[in-house]
Image 1 (cartoon, one colour):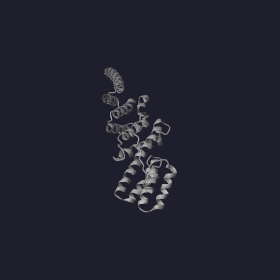
Image 2 (image 1 turned 45 degrees about the vertical axis):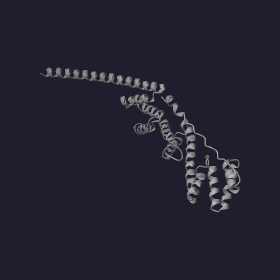
Image 3 (image 1 turned 90 degrees about the vertical axis):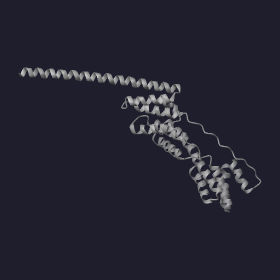
Image 4 (image 1 turned 30 degrees about the vertical axis):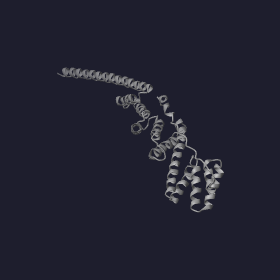
Length: 278
């Protein structure tokens, strides 16, 4: 009887080992199949991207993440999908995707690029000083984060340039509101706006006009000493500028001037470097 029990135990162990080995082999085959399917989908996404079919590219890249969400390809695919959305001007989708990337893959090595792409998505929705400033503030926040945390990257170099452009728009907003207060004859709020340009955006293109407006307001208020002080400041720094001519006109009514037009800004191309990352 004991011999029969021993034989049964041995047969059971052999059977279980055989089944376990078969399951492992099936699992290995399945994983290899998924991996090949994932790589194939990623390559298809890159082909769509190269051909300009950004919508199809974004779908393929997201397929890769679904196939193997724990693989090293998953975070790359999320970034590529976000970049594809960006190229389609689907900025809200790109932003949503990038926020998910930060939450899901907080230790991914391409974090600097992700922050830069997010900053650019906000940046591209900026419409000027007369529109909503929320995208400006959000973009500037991301760009400052890049400069602080990734100072030696190309992204940081371009971020500094973009922040200068953003500050220029923020200064333009202050000037725009200041002009509005002048029309309403609200002199104190107007003064505060133009002084804010001098204090916080002194390297922008709008400092010259801000100083001129201070000259103008103080002259209207009868505070000639203050008006002359800012006129001297303008003359010292911008004595050949158009706004100095406007200031001169305040004291000499017969002097005729013209105001220069603003130049159009160009869109950044640094994001195209994404292909070199992967």
